[in-house]
Length: 64
Image (cartoon, rainbow, N blue to C red; front, side):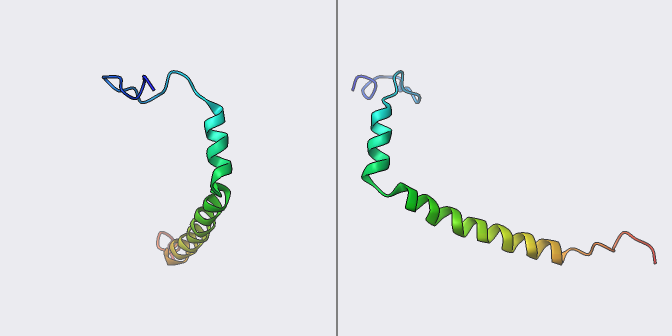
């Protein structure tokens, strides 16, 4: 609690309490939230990859 009221504030806490992280991950379905974020991002990556590679004119620098 002392770190909260400290001035100037510290952005990295002096002591970590791993139990807090464990309780947070078990209290809410963060695994599902993470998957709901990662799956659309992976799909977008493949769409953009396909779009940009097919949209490039790879023969523009060759003669003939």
